[in-house]
Every structure is written in C-alpha cells, then in structure tokens.
Amino acid sequence: MESLGKRIKECRLAKNLTQPQLANAIGVSNGIISIWENDINEPKASLLKKLAVVLEVSTDYLLGLEN
Image (cartoon, rainbow, N blue to C red; front, side, top):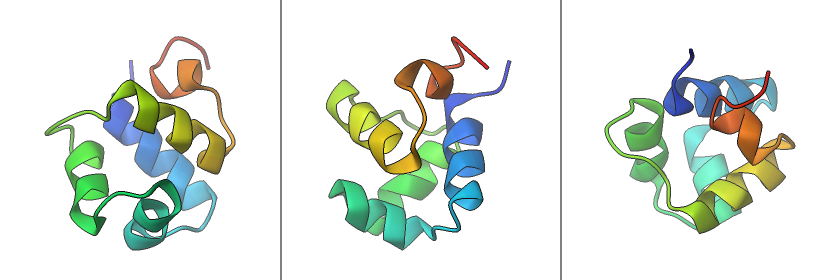
C-alpha cells in the first residue's frame, strides 16, 4: 500500500503544484509539505480535509482506503 506521503506528492504533481503553492493553498508553512511527503509526520485531520479539497481527491484516497 502506498504511504500517505507518497499519495500527497502524487496528487500534488498531478495538479502541477509546487510544495510552496500547496502549502499556501492550505495555510501551512512551506516545509511542512516536504515533511508529510517524506512520511516524517502526518497532517492533522483538519489539514487532511483541506488537502483533499485542494487536490480534488477524497480523504479516503489520501489515506489509502480507496484507489
């Protein structure tokens, strides 16, 4: 199963967004996206929801519960 970080990165690249652009869109600092994408830490539920909206995928997809 793909990690949450890998799915975030995959979706971000599919939307042609840089890490700073995604960070700005959800209201976090630039470095946090890298931390998530490298599976060092995971976003809180409220930020996971914002990620799903910006990336136009479901939270279940990001969490690996659906393909």
